[in-house]
Structure formats: structure tokens, C-alpha cells
Length: 183
Image (cartoon, rainbow, N blue to C red; front, side):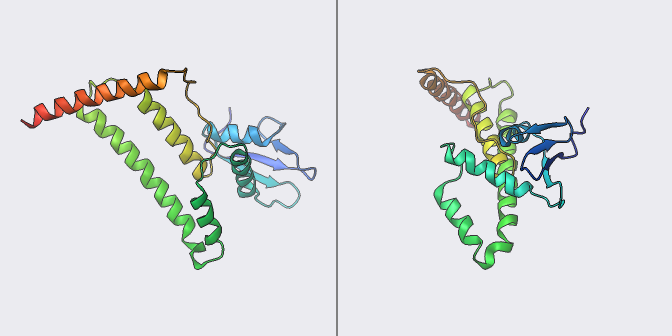
């Protein structure tokens, strides 16, 4: 069984083929994106030189998803990233992005805990869980792990409206309970 703590080592051959050292087979960029979506860290190295190519390949995966219309990064963020390569901000941008996403993950977890603590009997809200899954996918994409594809169940027509009505109803019930508790 593979050690999930160590990054999955992928070796790039001179032919540019990517070789999974755990399973002894060749993989594609989409396979690597799948490993990352599954929560696995990867390291891609050039077989001959030993150079770490991970960043280059992760950027390529993001670029391919963006070019297929699976946009996660708004134009203004991409523009600011390009600008940061030509300014003195280059040294602070990585730390800022990492800290921002860490704070976002923490606030999301605290919000979920406080909602459950406020009313442990509150039923799970399907749309809220779907939103959380999308946010997690976004965070993986922004922190080096791909995940911009929707991983939840496909919605059938009319389900979105039903979910929204259900959320509105549950929110109204919560507000009513809160106002009773304040009195």
C-alpha cells in the first residue's frame, strides 16, 4: 500500500512521457489532476537532470482547465499575478496567497462548526454541502491541487429552485427560532 504522506513521484522521461513510480505505468496530465483531486500530493521530476518540474506541470493543468472553460481564476486575479512577476511584490505574493487561503479554510470550518453548535438538530442542507464541495475544489486549485471540476451530483432541471426554496424555508425557521431565543 502506498504511503499517502509522501508525494507520489512522477518521473518525466526525455520523450516527455510521465511515469508513475508507484504503479509502474505511464500517466497523463489528467491522471495527475485526478491524483491531486483525490487529495494526493505529487512531485514531478526530470529523470535525467533531477529538476523538480511540479510547478510547471501544475500550471499546465490549470491552463488546460481554464482554456476548456472551467474557469476558476477571474481575469483580475490573473492580471495581478502577471503584474506580481514584474514588481517588488514577487517575494510577498506566495506568502499572501497561502495565508489568504488558509484563513479562508479556517473561517469556512469555523462557520460550519458554529452552525452545527447553534442547532445540532438542524438538518443537513444539500445545497450548502454542494457549495462547500465547490469551495474545497476551488481551494485545491488555488493551492496547487487541481479540483475545479464539479464533484457533486448532477442537478436535474427544477432541482435548483427546490433547493433554494428549501434553504429559504430552513433559514426562515432558524430566524424564527433565534428571535424566540432572544426574547
